[in-house]
Image (cartoon, rainbow, N blue to C red; front, side):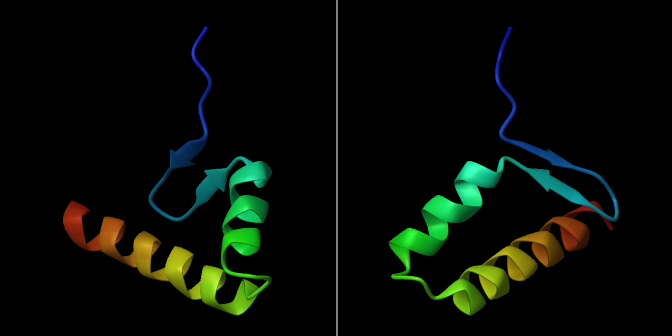
Length: 50
């Protein structure tokens, strides 16, 4: 069975929490930046589907 790290629906991204914390650690604890990056990623996915 393959592992899913992310599931994207029209209004929701379900993501493995480990990926979120890894991203926060990589940004030296700057969770606001990680949040902005995730929001931008989600917005780009929604634009592609239109």
